[in-house]
Structure formats: C-alpha cells, structure tokens
Image 1 (tube, rainbow, N blue to C red):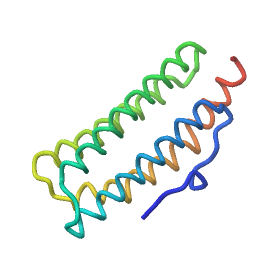
Image 2 (cartoon, one colour):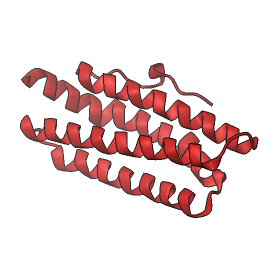
Image 3 (cartoon, helix red, strand yellow):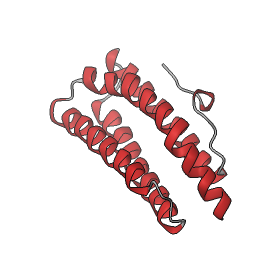
Image 4 (cartoon, rainbow, N blue to C red):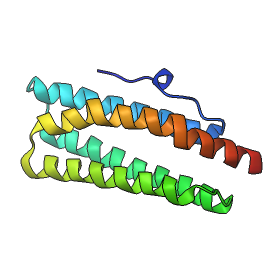
Length: 138
C-alpha cells in the first residue's frame, strides 16, 4: 500500500501543504517496513525507528500548526488542537503497543486504515479551514 499527495486536499497555505507532503513520504516508508515485516525480510528495529520518526514529525507538525493558530487568533483553535491531541494519544498507544509486543498486525491496521482516513478527513476539513484563515492573515 502507498499513499499519495493526491489522496489529500491541498491546503491554501503552502508551508502547511509542504509538511503534509513530508508526512506522506514518512508514511510510505513505514508501509514499506510493515510489508517487509509481514514477509519476514526486515528487522523490527527498522519499523520502530520509522514509527518514532513519524511520531516526532507529527508532534512537531501539530505544535507548529497550533502556534500558527494561536498567533493568528484562530477561533476554532481549541477544537483543532483537541483533534491533534486525540490523534497523538491514539498513535502513541499504537507505537507503545508495537514496542511492547512487536505484533505487526495492529500497527499495520492503524497505518493502513485509521491513519489515511483520519488524514483525509482532518486535512480536508480542519486543516483546510485553518490554512485559509492563516494565509489571509500572514
């Protein structure tokens, strides 16, 4: 499985869109590691490294976006931040479970099903509106 930038709405603030493109590349690198794990052709440590990298990138991405929202006095800041917080909790739980039991099934399911659906919905709604608001003020 692979995802593409074309799977997601392009937001009207180019720096936000660029970060989304970075995440697409990171997610695809995780898909490659999951597939290799399922075929027994890679070490679990490589998947752990990629998951940690995506978690760190996502945490930094959300913090930067939240700072932009705060700086621009975005009215829906609390709702948007709440969506970020919930996602990070869910993703953190998946990563922690992987590190604990190294069962590829649950992490594969999260990455292949939950993550792309969440991204499509979040980028197409909350990020799109936020990006338009930010772009109009910067």
